[in-house]
Amino acid sequence: MKTLQTMRHHIDQISPAGFYVAIRVGFSFPEEELNQLPENWVEFYTTHGLVVHDPAMKWVYANTGAVRFSEIALPDPHHVRERAMVYGLHHGAAVSLTTPADRGRRSYGLFFRDDREFEAADLLKLQEIVSRLHRGPEVEAVLTAAEVEALKMQSEGMRLKQIAYAIGISESAVKARLNNAKRKLGAKTLAQAASIAAARRIL
Image (cartoon, rainbow, N blue to C red):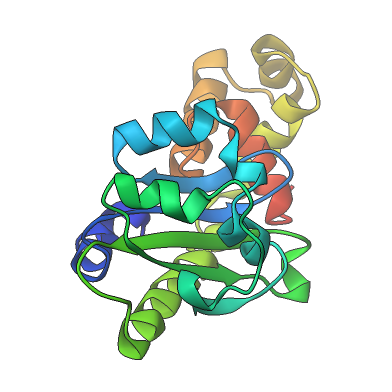
């Protein structure tokens, strides 16, 4: 299974100054993300609310494909690009991917180099990596019917005891099914697992 962690080395080679990748971003959060940007830049960027002014983020949510930051023809009145250079992020590239079948879910990445512009081959590789991660694992074939049933009941507000009684199994067996579903979906909480499963039309 290709995950962000397993692909990290490949991304590092193309984007040595740092990167941020978010996979299948829904209404509230991505299913998977990896932030390898300099911590002091992340703090500055967050503290000053630059995400809403960043031309790269505006491009990401209005386009698909891959582009160098230098080719994004959008105004930058808050000097986001100029400020990023102070933190060694001299050359940037963005990749954005979504399809009509994704129902609004989008995967994207922001990538940086401090030595040179991204070449066409770099952009193609980054687009291929994000595309592969966006497609993700075939979770529908991995989750068992029993795990889906328990997760659906839990997402509807039923407690462990109620689920156990309804299915006719022990509470520990319900816990095991829910934990398995959470692990397979790569979720940190059951609420996140249910959200991911719903986004993938499993529930």
